[in-house]
Length: 176
Image (cartoon, rainbow, N blue to C red):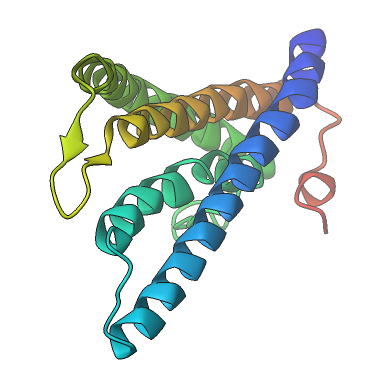
């Protein structure tokens, strides 16, 4: 199990950071485009596909970064019940929660890949001033969900390993 966890730790960081970097680029493009659109509206020449671009880039901004959030355990935890538990028991509960999440998101991911594949085959577009391709963003949605599902699986394995390790220190793992 230790070798598996070591392999996971080598892979999960770069994967999550690549998704985060892509989300940052997406957010930057969206911000520049919307500022240009706002200035353009005041000058009576708005950016033609600003709305479609913002809607589509929002998908990449959110879903490509979510694996990074899960990697660093930065998402919202409700610790009302687990607050007084031993760290080992918390990790068992965390592992179970991430396993359930991985199973749920696995089904969502499979559906997203199916929808993305169909959209790609049809070269799905949104008709407006300019024909805006949205099929690529359906694929980004599937990629983001895949990264998140993979991270949930990684977290399940890591948390189980921590719960089973008698030398594991909660304060050390949480960076305290």
